Length: 308
Image (cartoon, rainbow, N blue to C red):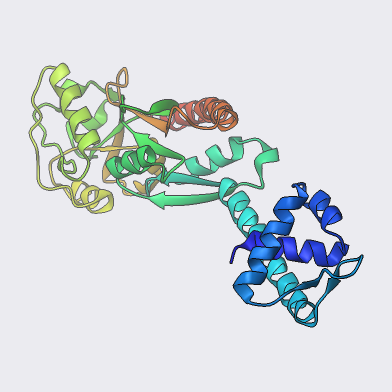
């Protein structure tokens, strides 16, 4: 038994005419007659009395009509629900993020056009490589990635640049300087997360140090920003790096924050997209990135200006 046979049966029963039923279904009358006959053979009973000039339902046909109509209503309900689910899914924007975006994520969302406010955002906090893999696989629509300069198969839109700031003991002689050159730190142990924890940051910092003419001395393990800053403030000789947005976390007078001359270590935050992304979304995201980039540049300039 096929669904179309039930549809044809209901149409004939409601129109009381095979020809009008065919017009309503937008198919030829022979096809309607053929499928209704097949349905009757499968049921082993006549649904219509064809001995009269007008089409009449048999007693069995009258009893089955209500159930057939209910089946078609259920199919319509099923289809409508599926369409709503597809529409809702298409209005969901899946975004891969890191756990340290803070208010910068608000800047991004605020920069999107207001007429897209019906879009539901779904956030997934993943490692940077996981974000890129999920994006390539289609499980994400976009992803924030920091320090990534190229991602094969993906497009990178620049969101902002973060110049890193040095944190070192306030009692150290270098803390007297208004700003530091990176090579000033050559003899001081560097406190940084190991490469397995943050490959992009680790490689960027070591490359910058080498370009400044020295191989950094890796100090004690980095045990998280707050713990590391507390140890530096307590007199542990060493230096670490802080993002501008994390400078507010440095509350101890025993820790000094110093700007690096010419910003030798700057981390780029990008929004990664697939090249086949919806053109409308790509355009809106590009505009949003431009607005966020300007806003963050102004914010960073204000934050770093307070170090002078």
